[in-house]
Length: 456
Image (cartoon, rainbow, N blue to C red; front, side):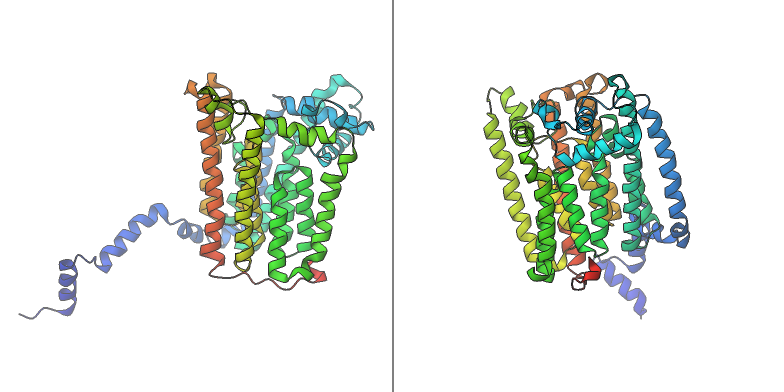
């Protein structure tokens, strides 16, 4: 009996346990309903590209009004009321903001200049009255709403150039103003980092548009506003030197180094600056229940077991681990500069800084989410944003165990568990940046023209 070719092939496949094309297609269809993000994004078509600016504008207005209501029902916390505002007002009055106790002024001078400028614009008639500090507090935090909206817009514009707009640009930009860990936490427990986010976002936008001179100097400005992006600058400079040669990069090196010197080194001449910026930050360690650094292992876990860890040892572990990580990443950037872009360099620098950081809070992690959203990796960005929100929720429960379903989160062990979640987030972020290099840009090296006056 003769068997047709198609039937014979199917029988042979069954005998060899080889799935038929029909079964493979059905399985792909089955799994695509749950996993094919690209498919449903593409099906939205040009309509999402046309409507995405309007949708983002509506989201910014709605979230802005919601946050505005929250601001008028709360205060910004001790950092704002006892440190940032009083020291900025001192600066407006021509007094040295570092002439007070170091704990209340452990920030670079540019931060106080920016906050003082905001106070001058929004509350100039109130700075003479100590009773009006609550109003100043609200005005500063309202300015923070506009800062967050500006970052969201910059992310959106950057992604429109990188991935073509639509949902892929709208979702990351919207997450920056809708995710509570990013949009509410920095304003509820106020951190002036929020005014540094637009500086970093603008620097990344300029770098992706190949305006390297302006972008790198803006990145230096972000580093002198708050020290967290400090390690990103040498990585970007190495990337530029490897891509374009030291001679072409030298003007950028000189100007960005000058910016950092003026913002972080020159103020050492100001009385009290050294004690606030160096001595206090070295002496300031966690108690095991006041930060979410992985060094809670030294601050809380080991002391609870009877092993007292000296501050100098904790500082040594922090500095050594940061240095080792930085050298490893610097070598990676040096060797693979041709297959990387500046956003990856910035993300790697921020992650290296954050992983072993002595004192870690959610607003510090938000610095890393600006390049995460700008990378254009849609699914990875959403996944990491979910982990950030989970970590921030655990942090809230740890600080206020009375509202937590797990009362043990308020202990040193609860804080350490939360610290592990933050560590996992940082490690996954690092992996994302390196994996992006290996799977995307390595296969399609980014073509960047030679530096020229127009690129500046």
